[in-house]
Length: 96
Image 1 (cartoon, helix red, strand yellow):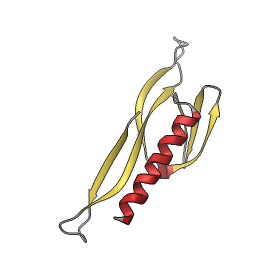
Image 2: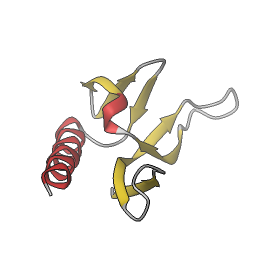
Image 3: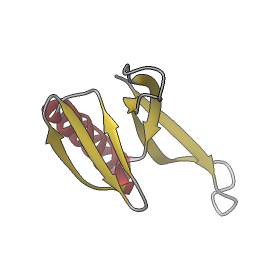
Image 4: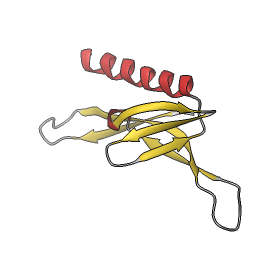
C-alpha cells in the first residue's frame, strides 16, 4: 500500500507545479471466472476524493465510487487510515 502523488501543470501558474491529486494504491479483488473459484487480484490507484463511502465486507472492504463499487483486500482500518493520511497531506499542501 503506497500513496502516489500526481502533479498537474496549470497554464495560469506559469512556473509553478501544483499538487492536484493524490491517489491511494489498493489491491482490487476480481471475481473468479467459470473455470476457477480463485479470485484474481490487481493493484489499482484510487483518488480518495471520488470515494462516496466504504464499508467492511467480512475481511475485505468495499469502496463505493460514483458509478461503481470496488472490493479491495485491505481491511477497513487500513483504508480509513490511507484516506486520513491523504486528507492531512492535501490540507498541509494547500496551507503552504
